[in-house]
Structure formats: structure tokens, C-alpha cells
Length: 193
Image 1: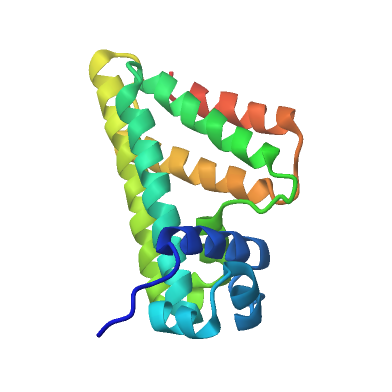
Image 2: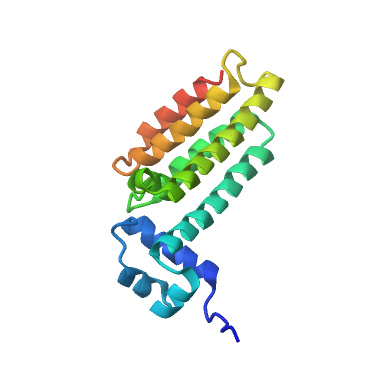
């Protein structure tokens, strides 16, 4: 008979996200996970198999929530340009509020792990495509209403904005100056005029 888990898997994944986000994949030991997750080593192995599988599940959980958040903002704002501005501002707000200057969990995974881990690389590519598609949808809608310039290709603009957000996330690991980020947001939005 299969044993029932005596812990909430989603709660454990949220803890794993925090641990990996703070220490990085390579900097996180199995003992860090056992200590930080609040479950036994055997429960961790029974549920997640190994550190890599747990890391992948943590990335998947994080990305699913992030994708839903981005898509909700894009689809619930009446104005395409307002939605893009809101996403840029929320990104900066979250980054500046983080006293530890961790940056973005997915971007950190891309920098640290993706170049030598095909599974992580595939997840990052999927994440980038989801973000790009969300911006493409907003820009295309804005171009159809005349709110956003049609002088430039909607896909190219979506890639530019997606890459700008990634740049903000990397910069936030060393910069906390709000004016720095506000300048980037204003310049990014000016490309849509």
C-alpha cells in the first residue's frame, strides 16, 4: 500500500524555490534542502527523486505562476501600452523591493545552468517564448487600434521588450537606483509611439 505524504508538495516547492533562488543550483547542497524544506531526506527522495528533479519542479512551479501573472495583466488591461507599462513597472517594483538582490529565478537559471543542462535550457526557451507571445499579442492589439506604432514589426517589438525585462532582472542584482530603471522603462515605452 502506498504511503500518503505528510507534507504539502506545493509548500515544499515554494520553499525549494527560495533555497535555489538564494543559493543557486550549484550552491545548494542536499543538506540545505533537507534543512530548508522541513521534510526528511527519504521523503525528499521518494517524492522528488534527486536534487535536479526537485530543481526542475521548482522552476516549473515558479514559471507557471509567472506566466499566469503576465498573461492576466496583458489580457485584463484595456490598453495595450498600459499593460506593457504595468508589467515593466511591476517587474522593477519587485526587483527593487528585494533587499537580497536575487534577480529573477528563471534568469538566474538561464545564466547558471541552461548552457549545460538541456532540460533547463528547454524550459528557459519555453518561458522566453511565452513572454514574447504575450507581448506580441498586446503589441499587435495596440497596433490594430492605432495606440502602438505599426512602423515596426510586432514580433520584433515583443522580442525587444522581453529582452529589456531580462536586462532589468540582471541589472537589479547590482543596481537599486529607481531612476536608473525608470529611464529604461520610459525609453522602452517610447519605442511603441
